[in-house]
Length: 157
Image (cartoon, rainbow, N blue to C red):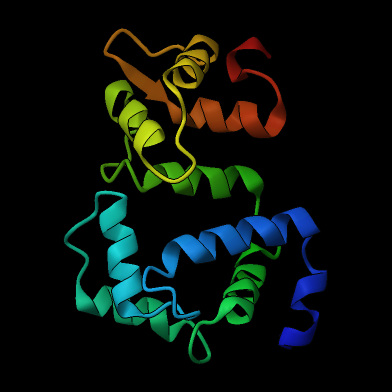
């Protein structure tokens, strides 16, 4: 894909969101995402044991140094034909290494209130009102993703 048309693949609001994500990941603010930036980004979301091989594999997916245009191109290629529900599920799966389909309510509350666009306590409580935790205090994120992308609860069909 040529980088010249990458900006036409997304709405202006999406480009702005990608720019914010790029800026968060570009920890040293040099305009490029490198290995240290990736390591720091993983550390910021609580994943401290990312190996050099894993980081190198990620960087190898890029055709060269990762500036914003390359970053956008890579997302464009990854998102082509992707299901929004699958994309959201994959984001939640980062916090669910065992693949249970559930996240501990207190952990998700912590992450939502301490990372990136921080949620307020009221916003988290509102989410838990709309998507109550089960008796074990877990959030069924697969159902949450379904509702986000389809607009209704699976069980109510």
